[in-house]
Every structure is written in C-alpha cells, then in structure tokens.
Amino acid sequence: MSTSKGRVRPRRRGDAGGSGPVVAVTGAADGLGRALATHLAASPEVSKVIAIDAQRGDVAGVTWRVVDVRDPIVAGRLSGVDVVVHLDLDRSLETPSRERRSYNVRGAQTVLTAAAAERVPHVVLVTGAMVYGARPDNEVPLAEDSPLRADPDPSLVGDLLEIEQLAAQARRTHPGLKVTVARPAALVVPGMGTVVTRHFESPRLLTVKGVAQRWQFCHVDDLVTALEFATLGRVEGDFAVGADGWLEHEEAEEISGLRRIELPAAVTFGTAQRLHRLGVTPAPATDLHYVVYPWVVECGALREAGWRPKHDNAEALSTLLAARTGHALVGRHVGRKEATLTAAGATVAVIGAAAIVRRARRRRRGL
Image (cartoon, rainbow, N blue to C red):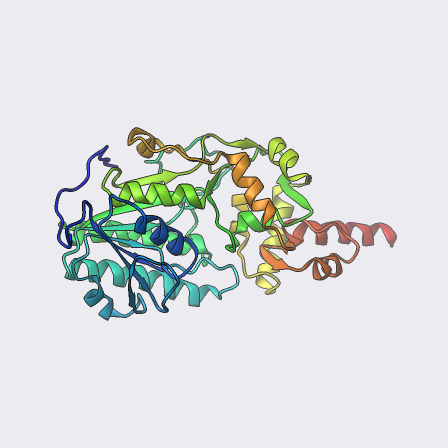
C-alpha cells in the first residue's frame, strides 16, 4: 500500500478559478453520497462538486448530472472532473443478492471504465473492512495490508470483494488512473441497515462460546472527512477508516443494555445455513461471522496523514442504538410485534437460530 501524506495533487483539469479539485460524487441524492456532497460543497479546498445520481437530490451548491452509473454515457458526465468518488452502491439487506451484485459490480466497473476513458486522474471507491474477513484467529487490530480473507459468497461482502478486484485490475489496465479504496469499519449511517446494526436491534446479543468479540464502528461523519482526505490526495492506495481502538463485548452490552445469548459455533452456523437454504433469511451463515468474530482494523495511513475521528466507538454505538426501530431475525429487519410472534415464546436473538434451537430444546424436554 502506498500513501501520500499532506500532499494535494497540483493538476487542476476542471478548476474554474477555485483553489482545489473538481470532484464528482456518485449516489449523491441520499445516504453517504449526500453527506459527502454536502460536506465537499462547503469545503474551501474543493472548487466544484458534480453530484451524480439517477435522480436529482436536494444538496445545494453542487452541479447535478442525472444519470444511472451503470450506463456508459456516464463518461460524458465526467468532463472536467479531477476526482470521482463512487458511492452509488446498494447496501440493502433486503435486495435480492443477484440484483444487488449486478448493480454494485456493474456500477463500479462502468465508473472506472468511464473515468479512464475521460482521463479522470483519480477514482475513490468505498468497500469495507469486512473484506478482511471476520475470523476467530484474526489479530486485533488487523494491519491495513493484511490479506483479504472474506468469503466470496452471495452476500454484500462478496460484492465488495469483486469491487476490490476491479480496483486492482484498473490499476494494471489503466496505469494513468489512480485508484484509492477506503475500507470503513462497521458503518453507522442513519437509515442504513447492516448485519451489525441489525444485530443490535435484537433483544439479545449472540455470542459464540470461546470467542471474545470486539466492536469497532465508523460514524458516517468520520467516513466523510476520511473521503475528503482521499479526494485531496492526502491518503492514497488502500486504507481503513474507523474509530480508535475497539469496545470489548462487555462494554457493548453495558452501553446497549442488552444481555448476551451464547451458543456453540456449530449450532449457530449450522442452523443459520439451514435457515438460509429454506429461504427464512436472505443472509448466508457467513454474515454471522461479523457479529461474533473480531475484524477490528488499524487506521494507520489516515493517522499518518493527520486525520482523526470525531466519534469514538461508544458514541457511534450510541448513535446506532438511538436509531433502532424494531428487532432483527437472521439479519432481516422485523417490527416488534412480528418479532414476538416469530419467537413463539423463545427469546429472539440476532439470528433466528438462537430462538429455534432454544424452542426445539424446550419441545424435546416436554415430550
């Protein structure tokens, strides 16, 4: 991994008299893209922001260019752009995996190809620290240059791994194109559900016997400032983003007010996989690795560049908890009433496996 510290690329292809680069942000109509476009539009270090999305959003002070990022005509919308930050990803847990994979991979591939065709010097992609994989033998924290050991399955993590491969391929195929990849820890973005955020919507926290889980989060505000660093060339290559350190599981329990439910690994993952095959949950069993095994990352490149997070892990978790609206069953969001009915008298954990195993045991004892 290469990093550039405190240095902003001098070339200004689209500079209209400002003091910084012209930045295009895809997915600017909502979520993370909207947050970054709003932030950059107010930055004195950015001369102009091009907001790209399939629909026009409400961010002021930007130039809107309405286009689907999967359409090759997006290249024409990148005229005069110095940096493209690609944030138009479908991270929804509800989208069917094939549909989501097609959208995410095709979008990233089209943006990279369009940028190279238009001779945009720099593309910033956002994947996730999940690509390192969550495993019981992971070091805490993981170095940024650690191998990517996530499973290439149909989950969102599989999408992110394919985007990582596209980034590596683009660097080889287009040597004049600089590609930067940001890998945030568990994201805390209002309105965006993830396997981790759904985990804390359950009345119990699932743990696996013999494993000490650690929790690291990335608040959306901190990811936005980290992406600003990348946009300005202050950090390059592949880098991680997250709060300092981590929370021990006991600390997460204390902050959330939730108690744990502990199961053997074989029961947890075996039952989850059976539920997935039956269609009870769209999430493969491997998604559960991210709520029971550690995947804390060291954010060395950003720190060396002078970046510091504004939110610690406790604050980020508190923000996540404040946005809870219901319960989660095997990574699928359900309302409180539905969750109670689904439990059928058993405690609902982050995975339906916990409830199903306990219910089965009770039934056997009653025979």
